[in-house]
Image 1 (cartoon, rainbow, N blue to C red):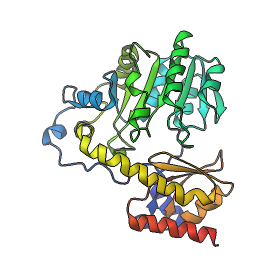
Image 2 (image 1 turned 45 degrees about the vertical axis):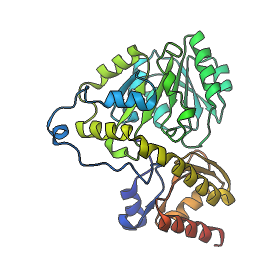
Image 3 (image 1 turned 135 degrees about the horizontal axis):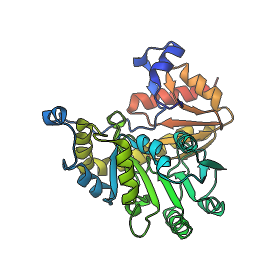
Image 4 (image 1 turned 90 degrees about the vertical axis):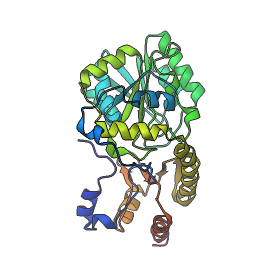
Length: 330
């Protein structure tokens, strides 16, 4: 099993700090999650099925009906490589580690392109190009026009563009999702998730956007009832709550800029709406320094990088600021 952020119980045991005393900034999940209301008893008592409005709500929110609900985008990430012929995959890295793991396990060969731009990935002449946009964990972005052109170029040579957009909800104008699986881009596959922007990681709800044959094969591989009834109802309501979404986007963007400014003196920083990537040769020491004070960040061993999520209230912002101040004046 790969390591991920949010392993709070493990951190509490390792650093001998009670779980309730931690400030967990390791996940990139919205700390002001969509407020889940009381759910109907029907969603608990009956097997989940389509026709409950989830697909329609998702099509309206994402601007594309070429979708399949999945048990978190992680489920689709694991299964997709099994559905495509084995080939060489150009992987713009560093990247969310579950992607290369899944493609490797399915027998594909990975060509890692460190901190590459899309044009370089296309020049690799591989059938598949894989990327996160914004990238997890570096927060790098690929401009929409360049990504659309990449899909078109790959289509000409019978290739596929696979994009994970888990962190793009705050800037929907940058999203490729409306094109995935359409006549314009039938070779474009996009993963989306309710775990980050909506803060509903525990519900395990995501979507695969792709051409019909890919979605049908994925559905067969997943089997029936892939997303639980209560999760489907909560997801439908969240996707329909445009007032909450419209209020949350500017709040998150402002918070990420605040975090960017707080971390900027410590090294090179890049931001998404939900986390800031801090590159510094002192990443390991800073991670340990903060963890010893009950502040959990996400450290990546392959590069000198920390991913830092958003604090959720004034007290948490002050606690992080104090921790960083103590680091700089130690």
